[in-house]
Structure formats: structure tokens, C-alpha cells
Length: 171
Image 1 (cartoon, helix red, strand yellow):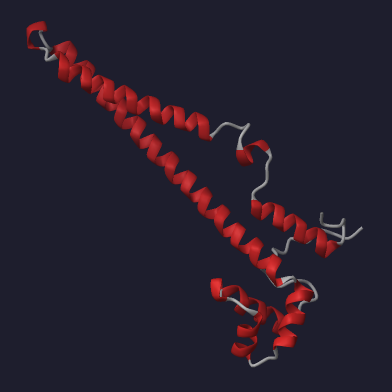
Image 2 (image 1 turned 180 degrees about the vertical axis):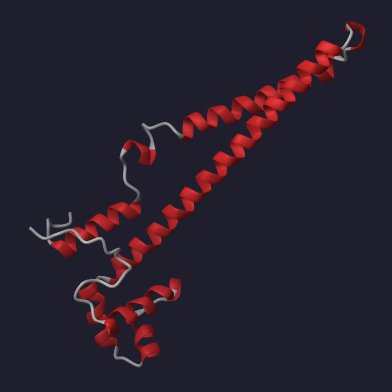
């Protein structure tokens, strides 16, 4: 049984020459303008050789895995930032609620401006409720990666590893 490799698809693969990997890196770094012909021109190599290396070493699939991993990382960072923001908003909402309660307890009934006080309490509780609800929804284990659904990067990486290790055919 072939062993699983810890090598990421966008890293140099076992059996891939340094020159072929260099060409792959050029291809990878070209972004949306990438083409086998452009790699050949940049490296002074034939398009035929670039096409062979691309086919042999799965350049298209490797680029897809790399881009999916970048997207997964960006999403993970966005989730962290959103959680930090929600925590700040909840803290602010709780402080606003506390201030409203303090103001209410210190005021004489004839000094109360019910319209403003109600609006203050309403906004503070609304902000807290929205952020707590958002956290509950985004951390629901029955949705997304937490439920065991792999990211696109994981799926592509697993397919790539199966192909490299010939554990099973890709479907």
C-alpha cells in the first residue's frame, strides 16, 4: 500500500525535477494570465516540454488546490475577524445596557424622558441579540466544516494525493 505524502500539491512533488518544479512555480505565479506557452517563453523552453510537464505533474489541479487553500485561509481569517468584532459589539452592548440601567435607577420619575431611555435600552439589547445570534449560527456544528464537510482545498488535496499514491481512482 503506498504511503500518504505530506507534500502539498503546490510544493515540489516526489519524482518532479527541479526544472519542472521551477516551471510549475512560474505557471502558478502567473495568476489569471497563466498559460503553458507563456511559461515556455519566460523560461526559454518549448511549449511541447511545458505541456508534457504540465500533464505529467498535474499543474492545473495543483493550481486549483493552491487557490482553494488560499481561499480557505482567507475565509478562516475573515471568520476570526468577525468573531472579534462580534465580541467587541457584545461588550459595547452590555456596557450600554449597564449605563441605561444606572441612568434609570438614578433618575426620578419626573426626570425620565421615556422616549430616549427606551430607544437607548432597545438599541443596546438589539445589538447584543444580533451578535449573540450571529455567533450561534456561525458556530453551529451541523453546518460547514465543523460538521465534517471538507473545504474545497481539502477535497482537491485528497484527490491529488489519491492520484499520486494511486490509492483509488478519482471519480
